[in-house]
Length: 413
Image 1: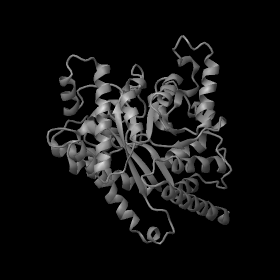
Image 2: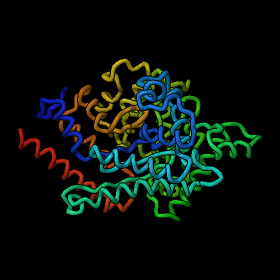
Image 3: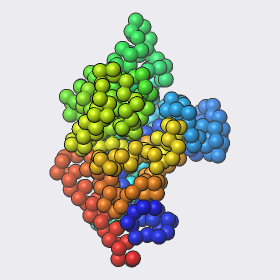
Image 4: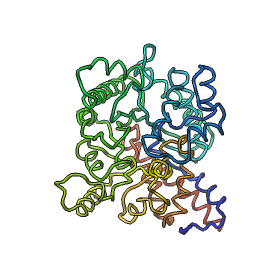
């Protein structure tokens, strides 16, 4: 491990990483369900699964490697199937918060597409309220601990990010009804209108209910479904002062990232893996591809647009990555970009924030300073659901606790 942390033993290092306060700004609710919970609900509701054991699901469904992002996304049909009533949504959100708290995550932004859970007995507001109820219950329990109430450790906070989808299909009652209502429109037009409807609903629900809806996202298959198609929805979110993050550069090139920034006003980039891949630039008008990527990288650096790094997920969806050392995170470090470690999907990728940081320490030249920067970027670039003054106070508390934990290490060395 190329780092300056004064630790020789891997287990001791992992223990330290678990103790320091962390964030997860890119974690999908439907990709982070406990396997036991999927099995439990599927048995209760007589839902089909390829296996009804944890080992069986890990072998047949949640695999270590996928042929593409599209194959990776097929797993979500099974997870979404167990998220179709308020009680199950609350349980899944509650358990996800507990799993994060157990490894030292003090702030998380849970993202999902409410549209996938809307039907005759549960509307968008019901879906968001159920998820919030589970997250809030876990947060209230955690923050009642003596070490939190005394101020010795920072409390747990969370936000909810809603995901519009790049493309559309009959994935839920909501989407099926939407498609049927626009029988004379093509897929691109329908997906654009579905995203706009989501933005309208989310803004109204956010202002009506006490739910920390902190961001608007664009997810789904990236190649062939340009971000610019969803300009109207993101413009409405922008006008409603709702922060934006966009999946971009995960399965497509630098132009996708440029679109996310310029067309959708994104504040953060999800993945950004292909930021430096000139071969994926397809616009014939771009003659100087090297200059284009250089200018785009400089643009991102200047504006401190944070990239949500998901190492394990990228390894799974991009078979061309033969070794993690080849991941573009190395170039991001070299260009001093603002980055933060995320899981993407804890269950699908069989990972945690702690494991993602350990992978980074093992494969990239991270010293104490660069590690601290990446951790603190997560807090500073979060869409914290409170005033800027309260956010600054919370970030300071997390930094102080981080330094205290690291100071304990120094005193023990």
